[in-house]
Image 1 (cartoon, rainbow, N blue to C red):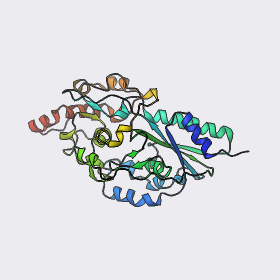
Image 2: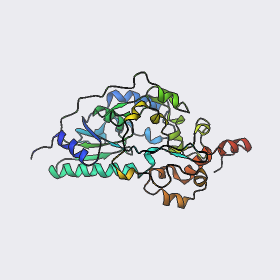
Image 3: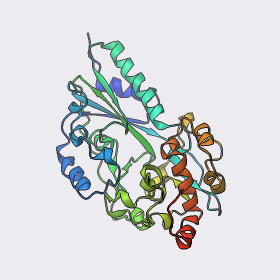
Image 4: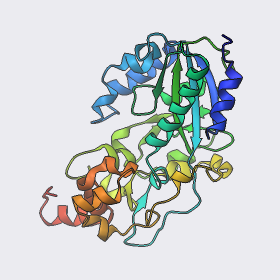
Length: 323
């Protein structure tokens, strides 16, 4: 049986709708290990406890698939035209969450790629990884030549900027590996660091997630947002795109071909009042199949309240933290 080539696998990935694909050897991420442990030791992951669990699985793909020999890294463009509103009373939602949940879209495409490979070689073992799996997506994308990690800690591609979702397919077969590593093209630019309203980017290539608006509005389950975030939301109620919006590489953004990332309803300009008052039932109905469901209804209400300025009013009035 003829083994599939790297070029055939990458070509199939592009046929399935991915915008970039590369292949790296499945081996321990030794050079990235020190950075991960330092980040965790400085507690920059905050209350994202899952980041500190079993870090060895993040650093060695063979901990996820013992037979792994190759890592197919893919990038999927999600950029959609449209600008966030600066009108009072209107919230802002990160561009990545305007459409359907990217986990479902990436998983479907990677599943199709794995099935295509196994149809041609049934002995191939594979495992699909997206960011819900303990795999270091950005590190593998760099090793596969897809782009470089910018000063805002997101992967940047020369063709699409940083508006890409990343995923991996671990395979049990040896392939030809991409040896090209994209150089760092950030140069002396510090636009992202200067634009971050909470100073979460404490230095180039280093983020303190506990100060990040995305962390606060998505991951944090506290009844109120911390002082380091709440007064600086600038109307963001789910995620934040500021560091990506100001990046010069954004000028290369182009419209995604994936129709499932088309904006849903009024997510380009959601009413803060409506989000403050959304019921659990309405939240479940409205955001079914959306990344926004991760924030939960209580989190979205909290975020909208803070974004509308009521966080400060509440603190000034009674200092309470009730929902």
